[in-house]
Amino acid sequence: MLTYPKAPLAYLTNVVDTYGDVSSFRLATTRVTLLRHPHHIRRVLQQKSATYTRDSMAYKMTRNFFGRGLATVEGGEEWRSMRRMMQPSFHYQRVASMTEHMLAVIRARIERWAQPAANGEVIDAAEEMRSLTLRVVARALFALEEGEVCDRFAAAIETVDHQLGEWVRFPLLPLSVPTAGHRRYWASREIAEEIIDYVIMQHLTDQVDRGDLLSMLIMTQDEETGARLTDEQLRDQVMIMLWAGHETSANVLTWAWYRLGRHPEIQQRVLREVDDQLEGRAPTLADCAKLTYTRSVLDETMRMYPQAWLGSRRAQEDDEIGGFRVPAGTEIFFSAYHAHRHPEFWDEPDEFRPERFTAEEAAKRDRAAFFPFGSGPHLCIGNQFALTEMLLVVASTMQRYRIELESREPVEPRPLLTLGPDKPVRVRLTPRGRPL
Image 1: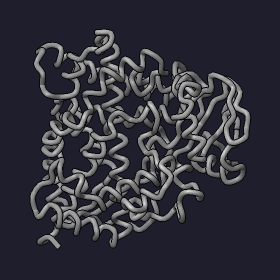
Image 2: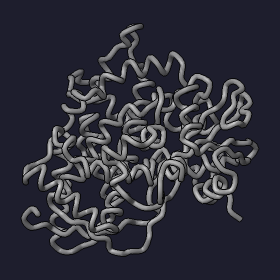
Image 3: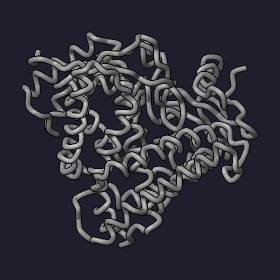
Image 4: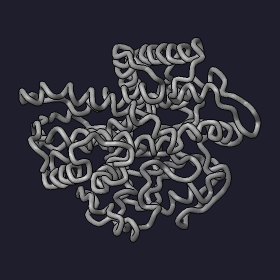
């Protein structure tokens, strides 16, 4: 029997296929209302965001690990103060200053691929992307370069992601109950927290502005209240950004490699664009705006595999959505995965077609239909950083290599807190000759 805890994505697909845009199902002892229509989701995230808060069951669970950071706190003045303090850290100029850090890490990783590529060896794309994006985030945001520390953090976060994702789906036993999975969760969380404390202590001890995000967060003040982030808030923000800043981008890049491997004609167009726009030189931040087709590939990847694939809110007062009454206290789930495939907005939604995101096609489409970074006041603050990072990774890789999948066997999404592949994406990188 198909159940949410065992197969959440398949279960929710069956629910929306059977009952449509507004439906409900029972999760443990809680009745959940599920939304998939982009307009209904826009009402929750934008039009009535004050009514639908992050005081939901799922957010309460994730705060067990991430604490009360910008991405998890319910809302209100605490959230607004954090947003005011953190927003300047992600302005375009600040992201531009981090670009050289990104490129240094990307270039080093691409050089590391030279030997396995020359030997025709197979690499695990997901493993490589997790390692790469973690180092990008660690260096650009926190000036952390120690490879061993990054490796330990990546391993710990991978375990936490799996165990926490399993628990959120089916929270029968509290995390304090020492099952084998819960013990793995707590051991990995302890490792992650030790590394976070190490990163923060380094910055607080030397009191030097390293030009990274953490230095800025330590020094910043709320322009309205004069408040600074407390030590606990700093720790929670760093934890969230180190996890979310690499895990989500790594998954998108893995899926992009998978799709480029399955669609050689699309890969060929990316290769031509990269050659035409870069003319053999290393990419820069300014080049990102010129790589329009490459950006379309990433947008189509995020449409099909949105990392915030399932969101939640709690209704604070009575409302009505799609003609259905929503009483106060209702737990709301909204599915970006299914909204991004809604037949009213997307034709042949299971087909990978980057041309959906040309300027002409995007201008004709309802803006509510595509929200890979969320929407409304809680729009992801790091979206510009993530897009820049992913474009630089793809462009730099395509300059040097072609991507070939080891197997044509389909890879399906694995729904945990994010949406990664359900099996290794094994690829060969073929060194390129002269530009096309």
